[in-house]
Amino acid sequence: MIKNTLKILLGIFGLLFIVYFSGPKVGDPNLDQNLPDVPQDLVELNAWIDSHEATIADLKPGNQARIEFFDSIPQKTKYAVIYFHGFSASSEEGAPFHQNIAKHFKANLYLPRLFGHGIAGATPLEDFTADAYLASALEALAVAKTLGEQVIVLGTSNGGTLSLILGNDPQVVSIGLFSPNIRIINPLAGIATLPWGLEIATAAAGTEYHVMQNVISPKEDFWTTRYHMQSITHVQKLLEVAMIPETYAKIKVPVFMGYYYKDEENQDDVVSVDAMLEMFELLGTPDSQKEKMAFPETGDHVMTSYLTSKDIESVT
Image (cartoon, rainbow, N blue to C red; front, side, top):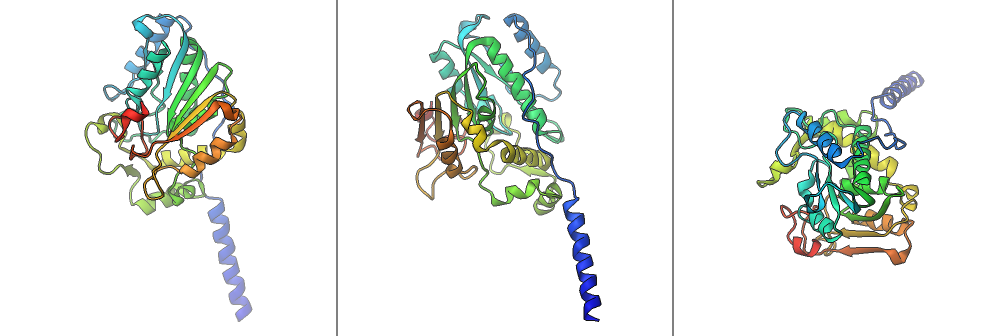
């Protein structure tokens, strides 16, 4: 009797094991995508970007991808600056910081809108995938490489993730990382990429959408404050696959990294500062050409924004 019961229990556990591990989960992103072709004439390039953005339904004002030419003249500059905004954000997240950097270097500035962002639709970021996200970042880099002989890459949060993935391009000469997302602090984030991860996350949240809390206007105009949980599974998978020592070792150019840290109680509560510091030590950049700096008074993960940072003057 006991043996039969044990057999039944083992059979049930075995079946549950099979069902669980054969469940749906997010796949690995393709990190080997090629840089796409973009128009090489700068007037045509600018029109190409504007015409594409004009086709996007429900695109929120000020969220569109755009070129800001140095002195408003459409000609190639020695340097081009590109700003990769964070997940769910827009280029306004980095204003006027990225513009100040571009002015300093007398550089053309490209402010891309990464895949699925800046749209006020009913199902925001529902079709977001890491592959589409990377493809949009590669296209943005191709634009920046057309705008300047050399490229300075800036990125906040997940924009920092993209900066590290793409930062070994031979035309990139410098990288600025601000609160780069190497690892999400929430210990439950890893569940998102396990079998049934989306279903578990949705059940735990009680909704298919993540909704930002305590959003103060006008932040809602420049962030996607409500987005589909599926997008989080792709972000987490990208971190797991790409934020590894091999990626960091490929970075050889000068790097500056800024992050919010005052003490153990007052520090970035969105992404891990410890993970940032570990990444920084593993960069292939010579020690003499990399610098890290804590900004203790910014008080927020998004330290580059006048909408969130309490000490934007120190950052910009």
